[in-house]
Length: 401
Image (cartoon, rainbow, N blue to C red):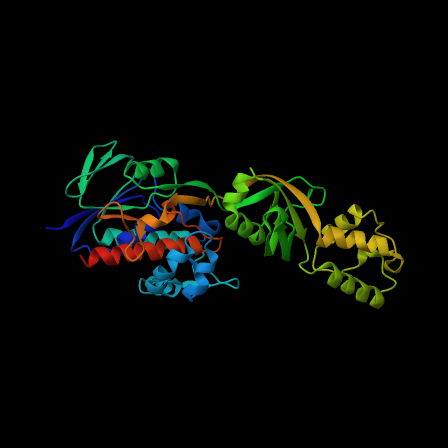
């Protein structure tokens, strides 16, 4: 007789696990509390689904995870982004690696990934129940009783892939697991500053941003948004310092270098340009890798007339320009969610998980994967890769039973 598996949570980890389970051994039911499954997959990457990241060395890959890097090393040795690409290729889903190493479906549509999962799960005749709200999980001598709004389910195994909602964390805490309290991980910085005003959409390919109080610096693309600053440089800071920034109540000072080269180098670049273009006005001088609008904003802040000849820029004026470009200090007051991709730091304590199988060390025949764990990554497909790898391990362990 087939054993019964109940997967609580119809997201990335839950579906990938189901897609890899042996239908000849198990009857599987996926319980999803919302109207639709795979909602995070749908919105990821602006609707294109950033499936993974082209980093194929587990030792390098774990460096993108502020929490869970030690534990994931063994997991990625068993299933990493190359295996993810193979898995989809075997199911006729073509993936592509973009210039920044993010991996997307060739179709540029998350629907392709969702359709693949649904097709796999439906082909196995597994049951998918939407609008199925789990109220409580009870341990039995043999297996578990899951109490939902519709009734009770008796099951041999539970796979817990609920995401990090407070309710789902409370439910697993009630079963004896320790929870590291969740705080937002990927978010943009809210800043009111004259240098950013009305310049939404302006980007800087090679910026550097530091938080002096936390002795933390990151580099990468930077973007001015309606609320302040975003882009990979900011998101990396928000992920690595999620807990500390929460402690600061998102009120702290940052230092921004918009051009990513230090003041001395920038001075050199300026002087070389001036030597070659002595007749140009400062406003028409294209010296650094920034837009004209932003250059004019820097000159306005530095109180320099756009029509002034570049040869007449004084030493003090040049220092003011370089300060505004390379050492701009701003006050962050608050945060905004990065797009719709709400990611948290926190969740089930990792000491309570067996990372060979993703089975709970506290609850027998109870497996945990995805964002409900105290694991998270920077943006770029890494959070999904952790889901695929963890879910694959669960399926391998169960299939071998």
